[in-house]
Every structure is written in C-alpha cells, then in structure tokens.
Image (cartoon, rainbow, N blue to C red; front, side, top):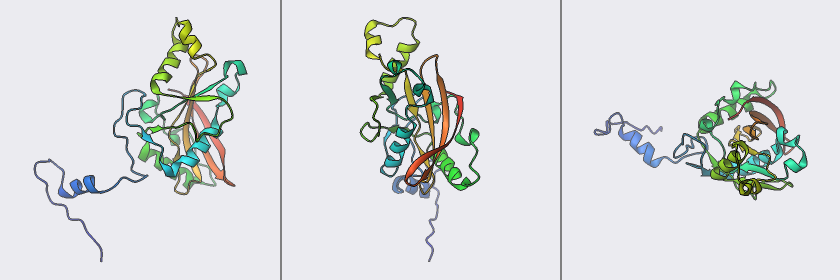
Length: 230
C-alpha cells in the first residue's frame, strides 16, 4: 500500500499549499539538504553551523593533510612561525570568482561516480558555512584558528600602508591565513572535494579546488588546479 500526500490550496499564502506547509514544519533536515540560516554579502560567521558529526573525522583529516599549502610551505621558517586558519569555512558567496569544482577539475576516469557525487554534495551545501574547532586538527606545527574579525585584522596588517607597532607585534610570525570550504563527499566518504585558499597579501592570493580519494584508510590528494582567489 503506497501513501500519497494530497495537496490542497492554502488560501492566504499565495502559491503555498497545505502540503508544502506540512513539509516546511514537519520534515527534518538531512545531510543532503542542509542550508545556512542566512547568508551575508561578505565573509563572516553569519549562519555558520557546527561541524556535522558524520563529516568531522574525514573533514579534519583532510584539512590537516593539506596544511600549510604550497605557498606557505615554500616560505622561510621565520616568516611562517605560526599558521593561521580561518575558523569559519567559506561558502560560494565568499569566493571570487565562485567557480564550482567541476568548472576547474575533471573527474578521474577510474572513479567518475565518486567525483560526481561530491559535486552534488557541493551543489546541495554550497551556501553553508561551518564553524571549525581546534582540537580535531592533527598538526604538529603551531597554529591558530581566527574569527572573521581577526582575519580582517590580519589582512589589514598586511595590506595597509601604515600599521601600528602594536598591530605588527600581534600578527608577527603569521605569513597569512588559510581559508577552507566545507569538505564535500560522495555517499561512501571515499571521494572528496574541498576549496583551499592561501592568502598572504600581495605575495599570494590564489585558491584551488582539490580532489582527494581515500585509500587504505588515508586520504590521498589526486588533483588541484590553481585559480584566481578571493
């Protein structure tokens, strides 16, 4: 026996119907239909959600693997004594240009389905921002998670013509800041896509989509194409 939900007009709400009102009120959110409560016109913590439990282990493993990024890894140690990671992931509106992953990367011939499912996860959750926490990172290098206001202060200290000695001292040892998007997965958590941007003022400001696959319990970077960054 198949259950059918009949839709009746719900006057007073324009095109809304009774069945849509039921769906909006009763149906729960799932991992594939999460939406940010609000989106801002600039990078902020507006609408950021806690890291979903079913994504946490793999997401932090991937973030940790990709640090510090090619730009920062090539710098002299005294210029990069501490790593800075933005504590709020960037969403589609935070990136400029907002090129989707399939616009920069081609699916691997041996696993096109995993890549496509990760793209679909991105399409469903591209407006979501996630709040990162420090403890799950697996890094032996000193690092800090920066709130959006701290990110703005660090960027200003590198870009402003005149900076106070107090500001210079506060951000000494930070070469810049690394931005991540949420990690987007296939249904089996064997393929993943993530956007990464190392920002260091005039020296580097490029972002790249990275495709990874899980082999033998470890995430392996398969690709990454450099594009103009935010």
